[in-house]
Amino acid sequence: MKIFLDTADINEIKSLCKTGLIDGVTTNPSLILKSGKDFLDTIDKICKIIDGPVSAEVTQVDFDKMLKEAKILSSISEKVAVKVPLTEQGLNVCYELSKKNIMVNVTLCFSSSQAILVAKAGAKFISPFWGRLDDISQNGQILISEIIQIYKNYNFKTEVLVASIRNPQQVVESAKLGSDIVTIPTKVFNQLYKHPLTDSGLEI
Ligand code: E4P
Image (tube, rainbow, N blue to C red):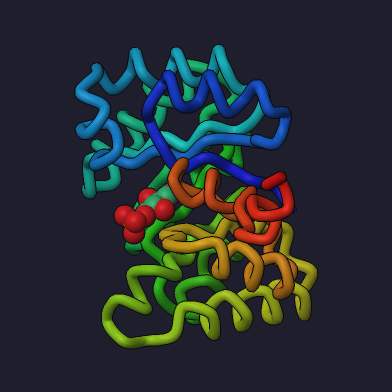
């Protein structure tokens, strides 16, 4: 299972990439806003640090505007996976870009029916949001499990990128289900190392 970092913080990315454990980065408009930095410049910098896909999200929702924005993002680097929302227009953009071999990450997936369309539109990645479903008392784990099953049934090539991760247990369950990728906020990534018995075992 590949591990992506779910952050737009350049210092965090620089430092965690040194571990050799990080395979890519995902960003979204909120994460870029939180970093306080310029959007395009941040994506460019991240692409120069990481040897793997970097998801950069469009902000437009209309087909033509989204496609125009997508072209600007994908011109930054071949590492950019253009993130588009799971809407009819988003999937139309996904289809256009995928035909040109541009990586697309379709985001905001909350149902298996949506996931079928994403694979048919040729996306490189699909991002089902586990945490946000749990937040509204639905079951994110069932969604991930269903998508993996459906994609296996038809040998769909779209990679399942589990997003909206809130804790290490979700990372472990994603691995047990056979997810291709999990994108993890830095705080949760650092928790993956931890066990109280490891700490107490070091005490003299
Ligand atoms: C990543 O691609 C997603 O945008 C991110 O995981 C969403 O996480 P959140 O639900 O914690 O905002």
